[in-house]
Length: 116
Image 1: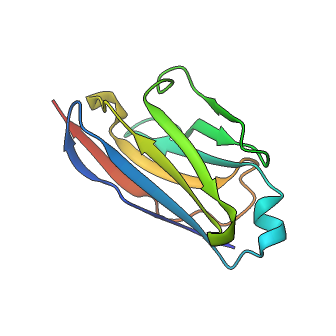
Image 2 (image 1 turned 90 degrees about the horizontal axis):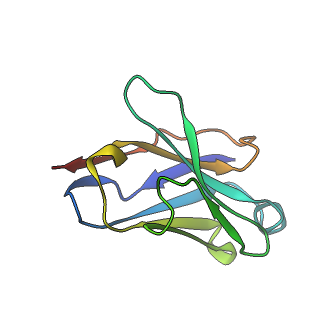
Image 3 (image 1 turned 180 degrees about the vertical axis):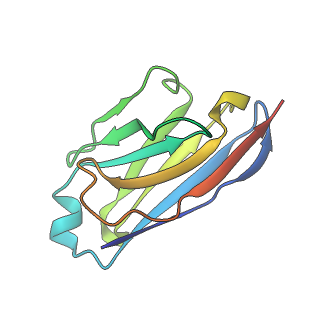
């Protein structure tokens, strides 16, 4: 399975973006049976986990994005999403998606740049 991220771009602080992730090649039972997650990697930093959605739809977020980001999933489309509101310059990073255990092939990510 190959992860395909999209939706990044350049936005001013306070703006919004919606990222999409497609698990290309996955079958429905495999996709719906796994927790999915968004990660990000800023220059010079390690990749960090920022949002998780379980098979039942419950969500968890790292404190730095809590209240601003919302993760959701649409199993029928083998896809999940990250709505990002009130973006801050420190959110600038390459955003990646994968299973929570990271076991599918990583995509190229999508760049999010937030200007002040």
